[in-house]
Length: 231
Image (cartoon, rainbow, N blue to C red; front, side, top):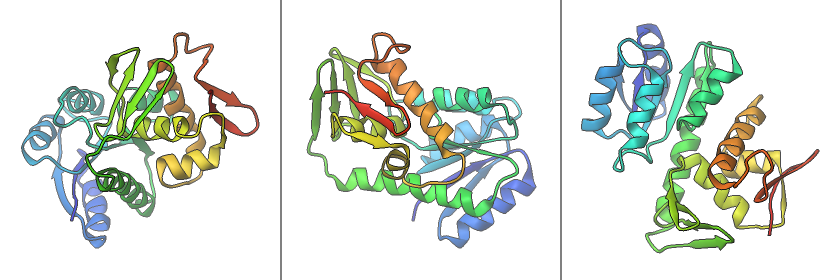
């Protein structure tokens, strides 16, 4: 069974999240500060991290940077917990590599659903085998087996969520995906307010693949519908 690291300096939140995750059969590890979290991520190699944004000594953004900078850890899904309600804070978390965020106070069942969806996506990627499934369109090359994105031959870092969304779009060039389709097929689950998370991920992908992100030529917005990867 998957191992989840829950990182929060509030012991009540840790107990609550741990209880719900253990009821689902997950093995739960915990850390109450950023330094311990970093040490445990390195030594225990959890399958997913539930990470509070505001932590003593090292905050959630620093921990996310640490994970994404390590080749052996970078594919680890991260769900960020934040007490802040400012959209800018949430976007920063996603831009730095978090796969999802949950705003406190939160419904623990919803958090469990997001954990399950992230782990299911990783499992599906592994079931695809090690054989490369390569998509190449224009300047972009996606290698699903290696989970790598190349832009004009240069390797570009993307989060697991960004990779899956881009693969979904590139696999059907010219097709206008609705927002609901991208949320359900690309992110694995749906809930109220998910649209903003999707938009943040698309914005991040555009920054990494577009010559001019403000005037995208690869991923177009189909107004009133969703997004399309141009042929």
